[in-house]
Length: 129
Image (spheres, rainbow, N blue to C red):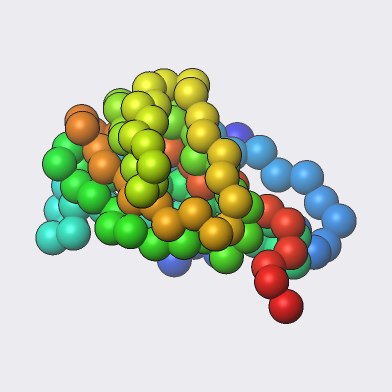
């Protein structure tokens, strides 16, 4: 596998028969470098996209928040490094390396990085028509 990625990055098309591996940790490290120089404190890369599934790699600098939003369909957030706090109106879920949370599209949520963090967002299924 390649050590990382180059910009512009073209996501894998999941509507075409194929197989693709990703060096997630090295990609997350490079994204963290981008996040460090971004005024927003974040950087992301859509790794793969198709009619039924989208996979996004995200890096957040410590203290950065992805403000309240909803996913287009059910989704899962998987922490790769650092620590993030997934917040809904009803609860706060702390996620460390290797931990995940899944939720439905109707859940308004935010993500806060309590330290430099990398995570995957897996958005799957069909959106509301």
